[in-house]
Length: 104
Image (cartoon, rainbow, N blue to C red; front, side, top):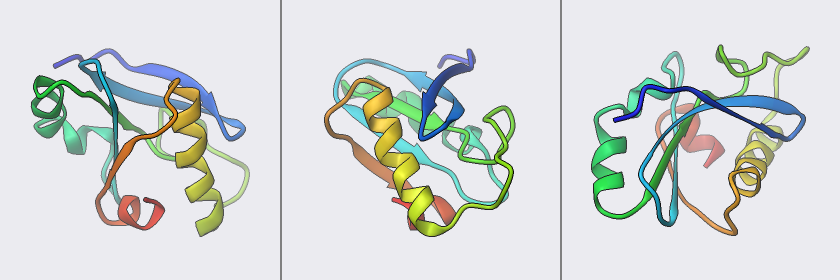
């Protein structure tokens, strides 16, 4: 498991994320009040099956940039689409928990 936080620009913000593996993208979205570390146990398991497992710190969760205002549901959904693109993928398997599930 990698502990190195990476950053990518998506939907007007700099998103921090954790990543393991390579292959097709699996994007794992945390809920409230969790963080990307919610997926620390599952991310390397998914990577071991041949996937690129990425868990971002979602909008407003440090170290991802904190926007000037709260986001609506549409903005959260656009974040996910922008992250898929910014991470260099055309598509992804998206897994969400709590508020992450709503965005997914």
